[in-house]
Image (cartoon, rainbow, N blue to C red; front, side):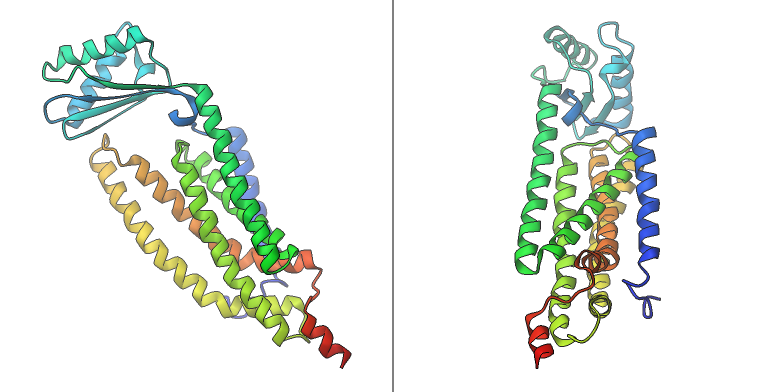
Length: 315
């Protein structure tokens, strides 16, 4: 299908797709916003050993118990999961010391075998704000270092093109988080950095082929050099992506099946993380194949900056 597609001359198709994604993302950010998780918004998490096998029914009983309690209420149980003999309760509302003691009494009163030494941790919104800034700093440092590396290995135009591609990939992932209201937790940083590394690697493979070809094809237009180079690496780009998706896809499907079968399992985070990675990998494939070379050509003005080409022109 892409055999006769010119990745630079047909840039309007690419730009239309990018524009559509951009509009959808911005509208989603404005209308739906983001589902900020406890890691960033603050709240509490409590893990309680019941001293007996837990189940969906027990988890639902505890949810109802907390929701109907006068000192607590439904706002203190946003999510509840279970595994083996324990249940994990989480909420965006912090517990006072008195409420913590009351929660323990409430659970141990209903389940006599439950361990009274309950692991309860409050996460302050201030800590969440620091986490957000630390996360943004980590991503910013990664992007800057990549820009420097690519600018040194190739040229500044290619570095700028690569950074724009990375921003595109992160924007696509944020759009998915907003559209599907996936809770934004610390795992988003791992997902972002994973996609940054994956996408930049795919882009560098194409840039390296462009660098090789612009000395061999010194009489060709830079746009044609870019197009030839992308076509030569197309098989590698798709094969690598498919291989990666098979692994991540298997994890996503397995965790999805478990979450559907056992709604209170602890695998919803793995499902969201792997699902977002799939979107990020596809976005990385698109940006590296369709965007990277085209942007390098646009920023470079279509000129081949090659010493060998200049020497041959003089001769």
